[in-house]
Structure formats: C-alpha cells, structure tokens
Image 1 (tube, rainbow, N blue to C red):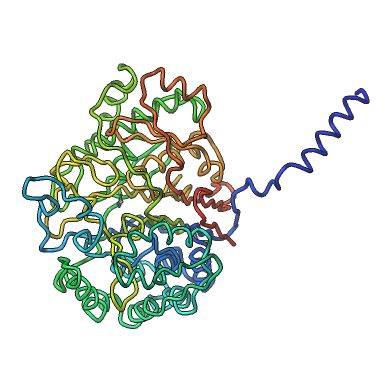
Image 2 (cartoon, protein in one colour; image 1 turned 180 degrees about the horizontal axis):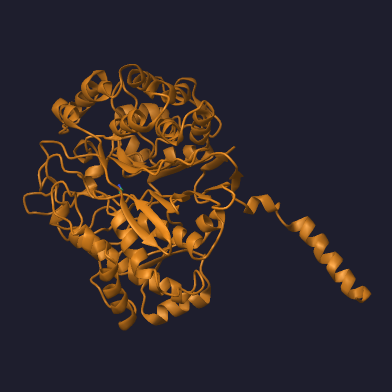
Length: 561
Ligand code: GLY
C-alpha cells in the first residue's frame, strides 16, 4: 500500500471519528427482559416500574394507559376509547374493544341542517361530538381478566404523576399553545391546560389535582365510579352545561367487549390484529394478502411504492363501501380477508395502468398524529399492542368539570353524510351511519406478529386515516426488508386512501428520481410534513432479545431492561 493510500485511510478514519454521531444513536434500544415503547417518556417509565414490581405486559399496559391520560393529554385519555390486542405466552390471543359508542339520543342525521348539509364542526368540536367513553372500562377489563397486580397498584404511577406533577416537555408546551383556539372555548380546559392564557413553558411542573382525585376514585371503587358513580354524575353535569346527549343511562350501559382477533398470514408470520369496529385490521390483512407473493424490489423506490399504493387504494375503497360496526351491520370480513379475493385484486393491479382516475374528495388536513399507540413485551413473552384516542388532538375540547379530564370527539368517525368526507377526508357509507349504541368505524391497527407462536413484532401508530398504511409499511420494513426496528420506524412513509385521488409522500424523504417516476406513471402527488408515530418492538427469534424504537417523528421513548 502506498503512503498516499495509507494517508487517505487514516484521514477517513479520523474524519469518521470526529464527524460521525455515536453509533448507538442509530440502534434500537435493546433488552434481554422486557420492553415498553410509548409516545411519552414518563408513561414508558410507569410501564417499566409496574413490570419491575412483578406485573405482566397487561399490568404495564394498563399503567401506561392511565399514565398517558396524565402526561399526554393530546391523545392519552380516560375520556376516549381504543383497542388492545393481547398475546399471552400460553398462546392465547385476544382483543379488548373499548371504542366509544353513540349515545341513546344520537340520530343518523344529527350533523345535518334542514337542507341536508353538514353543520360545520358539529361532529368535531363540543358536546355533540362526544361518544360514550370506553377507556376506563377497557383498561379495567384488561386488568381484571389478564393482569396480576390489580387496578389499585397499576393506577399508582398515574395518580402520582397527576398529584405531584411532572415537568412540561417542549413538545407538550408547544402542543397546548397550538391547540389554544380549541381549548380556550371551554372554561375548564382553558383553566387547566392553558392556565387562562399564562401558557405552560417547557420545564414548568404541571399538576392536575382534579384528575388525581378522579383516578384515586377509580382505584378505590373500580370502573363503577366512572360509569355509575361520582365521575358519571360529573360527566352528565358537563353534558348538560353544553347541551350534550350523554346520560347516566348511556354511561351505565357502556361495556368493553372482548373480541376474537383477526388473524392473517404473511410469508410464514401470523398477524394478530384488531377486528371491526376498527377497519384497520381488515385493511392491513387485505393489503398484506395482495402484496404477499409480489417481488416488491427495493424500499422507497418507484416499483415498491406503486405496488403498495395500488394495494392501499383497493383496501380503502373496500373500507369505504363495506366496513362498519359488525354488531349493527353485516360486513363481509371473510371475503375481504381471503387470499383468493386478494389474488383477484392483485391480478387487476398488474393488468391495469397505475392510478386510474378516481373522483376527488376534500383534501385531508393531516394535522399530525392525534391518537397514541404503545407496545409492550414482558420477560415471559406476553405482549400488548394498544392504540387509544380522543380522536382529534384534545378531542372535543371539553374538560369534565371537577374531574379534570378531556372528552373525545369520536362521533366524527361515523358517516355524517354518505359520500361526504370526515375530518380525515375518509368517504364512508351507510354501513357506518350513526345509530344509538353503535361504535364508529376506526382506523386504529394495534397488531402483534407471531412466528411459530411467539412474538416477533408489536406495532401500531396514531394518524387517523393513515394508520393502517403506517403499520403496513413498518411491518414490511421488518418482515421483507429486514430492517432493524429503529430503521423500520424511521424510514420514509407514503399514504394513499383511494379518495381523495392523491398519493401523499413525506416531504424531503424520497429521491427526485422516485418522485419523477411516480408523476410520470400518473400519480397525483401531495406532500406531508410527517405521517404517523409508530412505537414498535421486535424480538429476535433466536436470542429472545427485545428491540424497541420510539418513532423519531414524536417525542416518545423505548425503555427496556
Ligand atoms: N379516531 C381515529 C380512528 O379511530 O381511526
């Protein structure tokens, strides 16, 4: 080797030593025992604390669910709802559906005026947008059926965070200020979250004594306090203050429902995911079935984006036409999930030009992730994948007086008017029309991937209509492209939901060549700041090591031990 060559090598070694970030910055968090990944660091710590006290993944999930209601009021909640997918190391898989439901007085056309036009914001802001909350019932059911420590113990971290307070992060400070137009409309929200205009700055301590008292009541009396006791009466009083529909009978009648998960198979992996009333699981499995035998080529390049986009368009078109709450309408789930149906769709994709013209809908707001997901694997191999939400950021904007928590605006997920888009630009059908006690169609897609019966991956994301596409892309990054979980959640994302007729790409994340080829092929491109916030875990099948990654698009944290 010449002196010049040696010099070049030394220089490049020196430069890489000086300029390269530490390698650990590009690695997922690794742990031999357990892993908790949530969208907020204090909530991740709450989950780990409960695991170290001898709890299992379900105990940790319930602790995280309540802790996020304190530290992440944007989407963490006790006034909303969601879905929890559970895998137990003994082989049992189950789903807890704690989606909100329409109150008894809700009617099919409640968001239409006398001329049949949608009343602006009626389904998204204020009392009429609120569905009967399911979170407390769902978390309590998970704890009593599958937890070990009991509700009192798993509520302790959340009660402490609410009582003693926690330092406001930069992200929370910015978010509260950003949502001040919504929160300032309602006196209790203005007082608690905006301090009547004296906005919280990063580093200040945020204490929530009323929320602490509410959580303490649930710890002492169980979910009955929320659905038939003091808290229920406070919810009803707040509803009366704002001319809302929810009554004590609605709260008393609410039940979380344990459902059989949807299962699918993709290249030797078993997919365990959420059934209706979420559309997420159906769409995810339908897309995986379409893509399974195809050679996708390299990630984030024209060919893979084209094939995945065409799968997305078909799954979202089916969602729009067929999906609703299966306790009220019949949904052809078996057909939508069949490999033969997927083969027909695949053949049509391969035989037709990209992006055949489709009617335009309204643009999607894509305001950012407005739901929250967490993934947990414990040392024994139990796993929880949980997505829950208030729907929009800070939900309806209404805080229950004297109880310190926000109420959802989930009613907007129903079809206000067939053919008109909801806040996510989704076009929906009669199958998702409003009816008393019906649950609105969701996109939430908490999912667990098993390989030979043990956990391979736990995954999910917020992001409204984009959720199942985020989950699909992160799964393919791991299962097809063999990325580690941090690269899988960090990789660029794209989204197509059939209507509006547009392919959305994260801005600045795709090559000029890919963008040019997609345009040439006929796709109408739009650009997003970012898409979703996936919190994911993978498990190495040989060593059992757990690898966690909090999506860098958010400010969450993976904590393992
Ligand atoms: N609220 C958003 C969803 O359930 O999909």
